[in-house]
Amino acid sequence: MRTNEGSHGGDNRCRTKHRDRAWRAAAAALAIALAAAISGCARNTPRGVAIRYLANLRQYKYAVCYAMLTKQDRKTRTLAEFLTEIPMGPNADPVWFRPILRATTFEIGDEQRNGNIASVEVRVTMPDLPLWERTLDAAAGMDRSGAELAETSLKSGNYPRVTFDDLIYLLKERHRWRVVAAFARRDHLVDLQREAAAAYREYDFPTAIAGYRSIIAQLRGLSATDALGLAYRYAAELDQIEAAQAQIPESRAYAARNLSLSDVAMRMSEERVPAVFGSIVNHGKRAIDNVQIAVTWYSGRGKDAKTAYTERHPIIVTPLEFTDFSRPVIPLLPGERRPFGFILTAPVSVQQEATPYVTVGAIVFTQSPAPLPKLKSASAPAEAPRAGAPPPIRGADNRAATPSRSPK
Image (cartoon, rainbow, N blue to C red):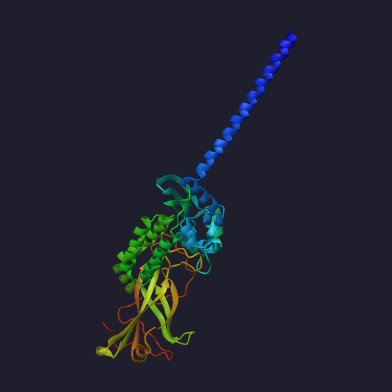
């Protein structure tokens, strides 16, 4: 009897154990399913989508990033066009895009929702590209490119950094959150920035500053991914332009005292049109980003000399933006002599009847904190400028082509 009772009791305990195991297995399966459901929901939250977008960007899955955009953005941009300007990616060409992206970090913050529109905070830390390029070009010297040092700089982490706050904007389309790039509006503002930058290079500081301020204000109010990052970059350029405008009186005095033109001559260019060639020497202690030469044509002689035409030519233009190491970003250094040449643009009638007179028209001091390269043992500099008439333009026959008297 005990044997039978013990046998039934063992069966009951066995069945209980089976039920317990089945319950635990079902509970575990439910927990896994619930976790998967929660995970799936999180993936389709604005913050989850922002995390996935940046993760795919960091893994160079650009096609996946493109597929995460809104329908309108994909209609505005093809995938090939998207690859030339990826939101939240560095403003660099394909050679430098990946290395710079690897050196960029993103810290995801909170999300904000307003119906079907949302935004996610992102703090970006990346190389300060314009300063980095100038610093490497300075280290490379006058005859090499900073590109030779760039890879080592990124691998070692030895580069200047900037940190700024940005936003990823999202729109809910058919129950899925998608990244908003607003390419059409962004393109318009980028075009306006190019116009403002061109005004700066032409020394039209009021137009450039007004343009930049308007663009930055519009970017800060634009519901588009990476708009704040673009505004941050443009604001850094605006700071330099405003500083240049404030230094106009000082720069004019410096140019008169410390810049000289030498070996100025007129001869035919490779295009077989009249051109001016010469050298400029910086005798002062300031580095100069931009130099503009003015050529004033005078008709008549002596007291009767009158201005017939004026043309202006940039002979040194140091960019504010990152150039992908496409050219040396080196200002005119203290003690440096640099050759220049430009084609004359005065009408043929003016060139035949008037006399050209060359001067330094305007300059812009270097605003960047980047170190300056060391000059090699240069040839003896020209003597410092003296009061009186600026250097003449000499023709091919070496005759002076200036008015007989310096105009006032």
